[in-house]
Amino acid sequence: VGFDPFNLGGGDKASLINMREAEIKHGRLAMLAAVGWPIAELFDRQIAGAFGLQSALTSTGASPSLLNGGLDKIEPDYWVIVASIAGLAELSSKETKEEKGKAYIAGDCGFDPLGLFPQDKEGMMAMQTKEIKHSRIAMMAVLGYAAQEALFRSPVTEETPMFFKSVL
Image (cartoon, rainbow, N blue to C red; front, top):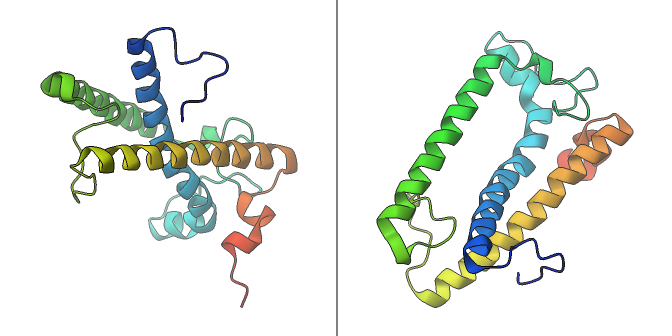
């Protein structure tokens, strides 16, 4: 937080806010991916079998990705649905930004059904700092998953069984 040696945040406040918003959104996706990637490797075959579908994992049991292949198994309809949901989320975020005006906080998409986001200024700052730090860790984790599977040609769950397999 606050470390930008390559000036990626831009030269003005608007650019910095835009980049922070993008980082938060990508970080949230990375947090979901950091959990979803190994869960897919562990349970995809059982879930697909229960629905009578073909598994989407690669021949080695890895999650499909650009580096290890397998994306050809994913139906085009899925990508249309994903793109539509992403578009709706972006529109909702834009509406929230316009509604709140100057009170808008980067990354606020108006979705907090459990009411976890604090209402006081100090709590908000602490929560935002936690989110951005966890997001950055998750982005590195997903990068690690992709690199590990591309280099070793085996699923993340097999390369690091101490995290995903029972010791009993």
